[in-house]
Length: 285
Image (cartoon, rainbow, N blue to C red):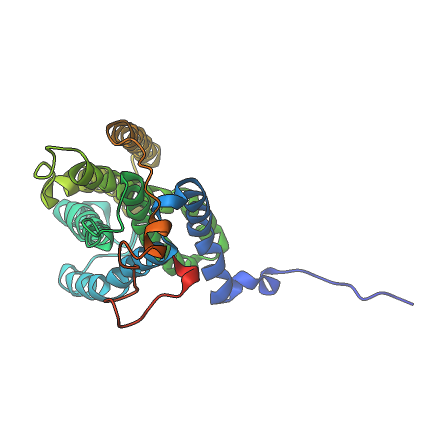
């Protein structure tokens, strides 16, 4: 009996459908969440991890997208290489990189975890470090889904290693500042919101402006600015690791187990919204 010939094409791939893009985009978040909870379980609740992730995603999907749409309407940003290089407005490029992208996006990540800074269930600096990292990961994942729906699985794959990682890094960096403000004596007033945002916004802005110049000009510079942007990202990772290690040294691990405190009703159980409105089940914390 003659067998049927089976052919494979891009149409057979699940990534042709939005569900495949969403699943692939969520992989970095699942991996980071799994290991973070495994390492720092005594200080974390799954409910708080979910809330930080969803809250950051909400800020991106609703107010930020609306605000960016209004900005784009007035700026009239051109697509890549659709005009002569001499017609490019450098002011618009820098505005797009530092204000429209870097500043607004870092504010969204900051808001995603700043609300829980002084909550009683934040008993260790490591909890804030994880939640801040997840806020950045959330932003990267949602952004990755959008780009993946336009560009396919290859875009999702390489952005998972670059963009999601970069967003997680700036989120974690902001978390090191707030963890120090919360748990290091004498540092409560050291890190107001604008100081927390300065380095992440500058690093993010420089990274973006290099990529915008590289992709926006029909005749890009001889030296690939993408390579320079990757060096900026590497420098950011090194500095964030330095800050991370500093905070861990200043804030020794506590013996407090948040789950035991919740079981003994010493502190209120974290809820998805205000206490008494939607109660989290036992498995959530």
